[in-house]
Amino acid sequence: MKTYDALLQPVEKPLHTEVEADQLNVHSIETFGTHDGPGIRMVIFTQGCQFKCLYCANPDTIALKGGYWLDVEEIVQKAISQKPYFGKKGGVTVSGGEPLLHRKVLKKLFQRLHEEGINTALDSNGRLIDQQTKELLAETDVLLLDVKHINDDWHHRLTGKSNFNTLKVADYRESTGKRMWLRYVLVPGWSDQEEYLHELGQRFKDFTTIEKIEIQPYHKMGVHKWEALGMEYGLHGVEPPTQALLDKTVAIFKQYFREVKVN
Ligand code: SF4
Image 1: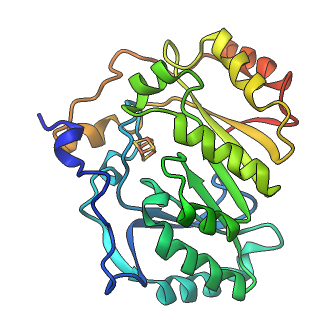
Image 2 (image 1 turned 180 degrees about the vertical axis):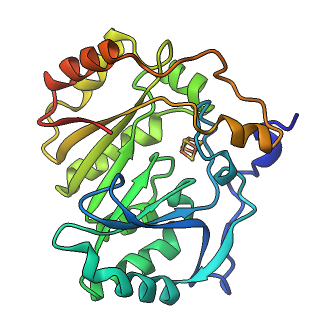
Image 3 (image 1 turned 30 degrees about the horizontal axis):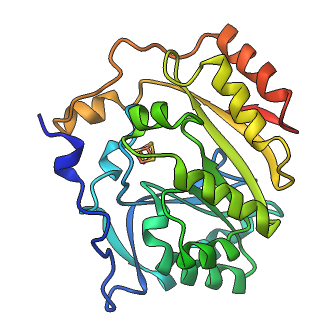
């Protein structure tokens, strides 16, 4: 069995050489996406992630090596061809993997999309917060921030990393006054503890930039991918949340957030 760590490379390793600075390492592209940001969107899944979420539905996006390279301008032209379908709300979402690993080239992509009048969204776990992240967030119309757990011990258990930077990204985004949605994967026995759901609500209840929180019920659709990659799946025996658990979580979050949606 391979482990995650065998697939991951050191955090410091640069992903882009100067030659590649106008290219994005892409895992896949989805058209007409309706689950990753406002309206109808083209969703670009980038390659590489430093988290190792036990429930990851796309473990093939985790390895930093893989995917294929696309020029920023090729992506822009693809988005322009789909622009008639985006309507007023839609646009382009970059997801992952973890898109912040590609923040330098993504800033260029989002700038170009803005020049073409196309809305930009970033679906991120908030793993990195530096000047380049801030510059990318300035070009991001909607940040979809995945908070995997509010308790750092549980966050470590679920993802292998701390939630420290994720919370810093949330605080930074709030300071800019720009739009943000939170996303929360609800895993029975792992991220459904009532006290922590309340703690998460308390942590964010005064944020003015958070328009809604989306609950993403745990599912087992990625298990076969783990097996195909020869990787050990860590949540065998865990079932998706029941309707009662979903209802209870929605009721708790409604005490703190303007809008609560189950995705
Ligand atoms: S952050 Fe997303 S892509 Fe990365 S391991 Fe977790 S679920 Fe998978």
